[in-house]
Image 1: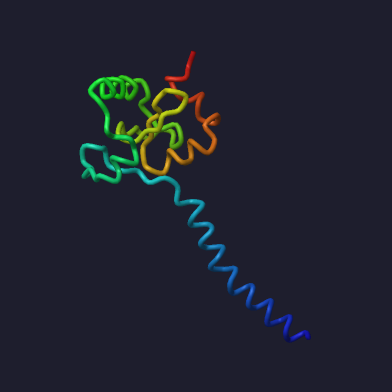
Image 2: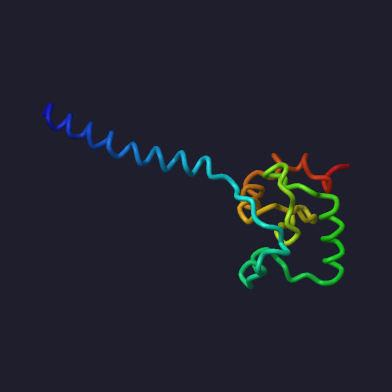
Length: 120
């Protein structure tokens, strides 16, 4: 019985090391900075996903909002990419990379205070 316990303990220790290492990597990987939109090749999937089919009026609104909101609310300090946004309560919120909209939508109230378009 004791040998089974020792074997189980060793097995758990051996497997816990890579699992712990992977967990640490995932926690510290964060959001990667991407080059500005002008330098990125556009793909149809990205365009569809990020609602890039805008009319001329939407383009003007996006430019105005992009001027007001200069940094990503999720990754503070990173400049926004005007092609990556979500609409929240009728206003566009811009982000620096593709990972940030999901984080924003998970808890928008955490980020609203950082956005000029929601100041009153």
